[in-house]
Length: 245
Image (cartoon, rainbow, N blue to C red; front, side, top):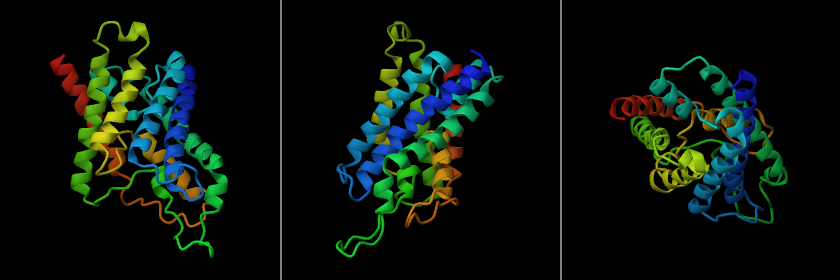
């Protein structure tokens, strides 16, 4: 695969992933959304379907990694680092693009996110639509959660490559998508399961600069955890896979 194909594939695939993911968070969170308050299960499946659509779209061009933790895990296992920077750049750009697209889809809802004299509700906090926020702010615990959850993603992704027939049948992406749903349902409660540095950092940058009413802080003091945690998890998964398989 050429650098150009990898970059385009990762930009497009990651943009689709974030469009679905930030989109479902906006749908569940924002006032005046028909899906408002539909719950965590809806969010988990929305992100899973985002992985499904994004990875299948990107697969012919780049393999559809869409996640720096996965890219790093593969590089640690294989020792091939030459194209890692292309993957990471495409993933960050794609994540920012996807966040902008999700904002445009819900533009009217974001613009209506102001104090309404006809409604007693406060304006909705918006950072959680774009990036993760811990339920209990404890840096050590939050970091451990992100590391473990990312290992639970990347190690199976690497192992799926040993499962005869998955690649040939084209069902690997489907299985990974269901894995992401499972991680969200099982391990997502403490931190919102970033498990992907680009997924958190790109949209957080977009949230910082978009003209969103009542958007509040972008919480840059926490932002290192959903970047460092998944990267450490990706490295650990690559090391474990390389040693055990």
